[in-house]
Picture (cartoon, rainbow, N blue to C red):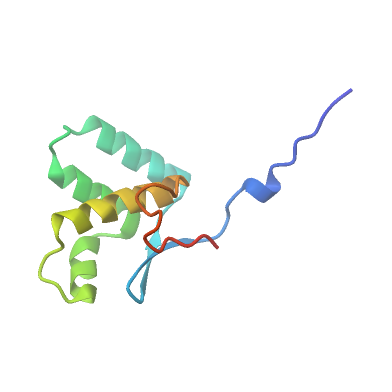
Length: 109
């Protein structure tokens, strides 16, 4: 006797975006890219801020932080906002939409 487990409905095939204000930013959540980001961040020293920014660039596109700051009309994101951007983007890219975005307007489609 065999059993078939159909996981089709659990697989995500749609494009992923994060929303900040009225702008949408595409997240490159392809498995190859996310695995590369995870490896890159893991191999970087914990206090390497540049590695975090490079990880964001890999997920949201080069220069994404400056673009977001410009779109928001701010000279520089606060540290809290920067941290929230990193956590929320990583959670979205890995499918773990939860703690960072919970209660902060994160919408599942």
